[in-house]
Image (cartoon, rainbow, N blue to C red):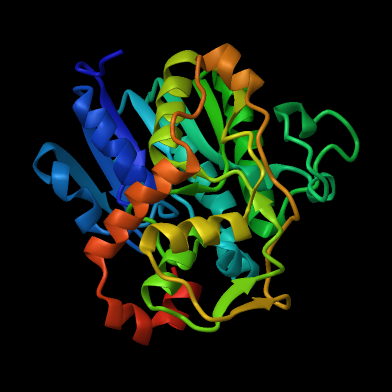
Length: 338
């Protein structure tokens, strides 16, 4: 599907995932508007399409900014959020909780301005934490708003995302706006920052940290999903889902941090003399991977990138865009501040 006659808004469009989505929409012929306050995203992320997009620079928690951003829009991809990696969401829960206000302001102004369709970037953090201690793939119906005890999200960030989902469903129910929800699982790729696991491990390797620090015991697993696959899921959800049905965007593999570390060492051709496991650091749930049956059925979607393929692309970007000495000197700051 092309978007040649559509004006499309991407909130958080200067961010890691958002900027890749913007590039894809521009390539499909959309008239793209980006709304971002550049608190974590950067104009540099949009360099490739800078002459083909418009930008609303401001905080979407402010009504005037949200009204201006959503005016004249056909389709909306809502990715803007206060978030970061595990260290960030553990240390800044109040920041993450403000996403509930952000989401509702964006949805309400979108409805007021006649936006036809909203796609909401949700998160695997919406899933109950108690079922993620064993290796069980997460299905969308494991979260329920209809059953007592049907929700038990992951920290304030997860609860805020879950409330964003419910709010969008409410706007769909009351106003009939077409809506879709994509639960993103542990995305990684070029332009991501060092507060997230994959980039943190690459940064530590580039800095040749020795002893090499791994948070937890390294046996915790995630289903690391390359950004191009996430973008594909968002676009297909916007095209094919209209009733606010949530869809998982993730791989079905349980990949341990130790596995990722060894692959990064191999690709970057360096290995430390010693590895130190920091078991006092926040690591989140023990295991997380996605059941993608619904995505296959409704979106005809499944991930295309293997972990190694995604790491090769990500490492190539990081090495070519970071100075080793700067990373080494600022490593602790980079790992904790988005």
